[in-house]
Amino acid sequence: MSKEGKLNKINLSVIRDMKSRNEKIAMITAYDYPTAKIVDEAGVDIILVGDSLGMVVLGYDSTLPVTMEDMIHHTKAAVRGTERAMVIVDMPFMSYQVSCEEALQNAGRLMKESGAHGVKLEGGREIADTIRKIVAAGIPVMAHLGLTPQSVHQLGGYKVQGKKEPEAKRMMEDAAIVQEAGAFLLILECVPVKLAFEITASLDIPTVGIGAGVGCDGQVLVLHDMLGFYDRFVPKFVKKYAALSDNVRSAVNQYVKEVKESTFPDDAHSFR
Image (cartoon, rainbow, N blue to C red; front, top):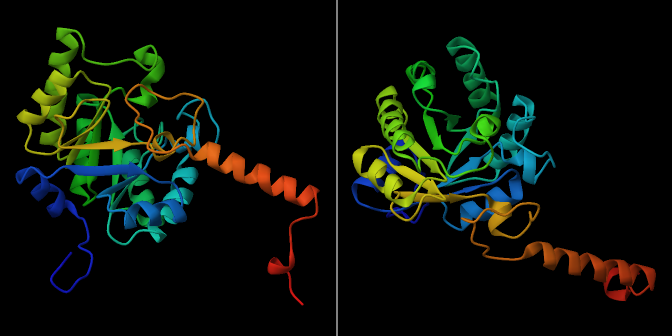
């Protein structure tokens, strides 16, 4: 809170300062107005409108089918529900891989049409020039290494990355490269604890882990996973803080029962 009692808006400067004073960064996904409003009020620092919405909201088997239109639609809603948190939007598959120029156009469109505060890209040295070009245009970029879901077929599935020495060495190098290219924060997904700690210690920019241990500068989870809303696949690194699917199912079952038995609506929910 500020001295005036107002919420302090999270921005790049605040995120940098959080690393320097060893304050952990709390990030979570949200894909619509009501959930963004709730997590914003709960105190998260960064809301990620991830392309994970393809799986937990749209019902796809992966993030690959997600489109620019999907990301813009959901991010606009999340932004409307946010007052304090920084909102970052995933650039979907093939929106930045073709060329630096196309990536810049798509990043600009995401920012302009959705109202997000920055974009996230997956990859290391192979997208360094793209990061530089987007950052040079004034758009904050969040990087993402380790298990990168858009490359799941190339990686051979949803597996821990960096377990072998050559992979770990390359990831360390990629982390330095994306930092040099201008990324303001690095996501580390499904990375061994020791490697994630070493990468974090080597960088000036903060790291946020998801399945990368407590040594990162912050943590991120998919909202639907941590609330027990999505149970098709639950990764090992997810801690369930609630079981909302059970609660919602029970509530709807009760509603159906009362409708069938004509006990709803009663006098209290009717007009005279």
